[in-house]
Length: 146
Image (cartoon, rainbow, N blue to C red):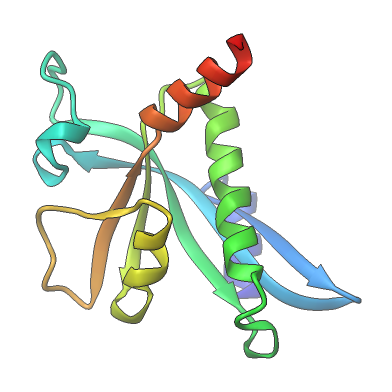
C-alpha cells in the first residue's frame, strides 16, 4: 500500500492522508477524482437540466483503520476529513458527489452518514455508493448567512 500510495501521489492520481495516534498509524484515506453515471443515482439526487451522461465527484479510493484502532471513531474521523476536503474543492471545481466502492460489510457504515447505494452494480464484490453534497452545501450556506 505504501509504495502504491506514494507512486499514485507522484503521478497525480490520488492523494493519501494519514491518521496517527501517539506515533502509530491508526488509519488512512485516499481521495481521487471520479465520475458517476447519471442513471446510477436516484432521480431525486440528480438534475433534470443536466445534459451530460456523468456527474463529477471525489472518490474515496481507500479508507482503512488499523485493527488496533477499530471502533474508536478513526474511520468516522477519516470520512469526515474526506468530506471536508471534498467540500473545500467544491469552492473551486465542480464536484457534486462523494463516491465510494464499499465492501459489503462496510455498507452500513457509509449509509449511517447519508451515502446511498448506486442504482446499478449492486451485485459486485464492491457496491458503488454516493453522497450528494448539494444538500450539505445548501445547509452550510444557510448557516453562514444566519
